[in-house]
Length: 121
Image (tube, rainbow, N blue to C red; front, top):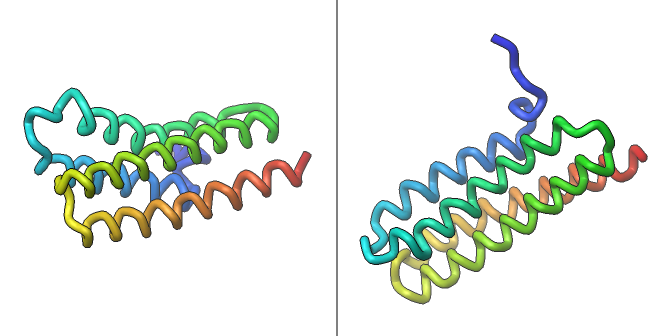
């Protein structure tokens, strides 16, 4: 089976794992939130990995870096949803800190990869 270039990236692998964490975490959210924060945090977390994957198929490093910017923005959106979820007591402090730590690592990896692409011209 052919392995696409994005599948080899540690940042994509970590982002994929993070999406699974979010999906499991939101299983405990109130059913009244299914079309609100539950849907929003699932979409924004999924967008992190999706934009990393999509960016790798672009022809120029500038385009690749652009999709990493979008991915980073989705990560900060996800962090916002996590903060609100904690404020609403939908997640515990421990769950919040666990997810935040994962997100911070992913953000650092995104920034490193973006800097690499931009340095390559």
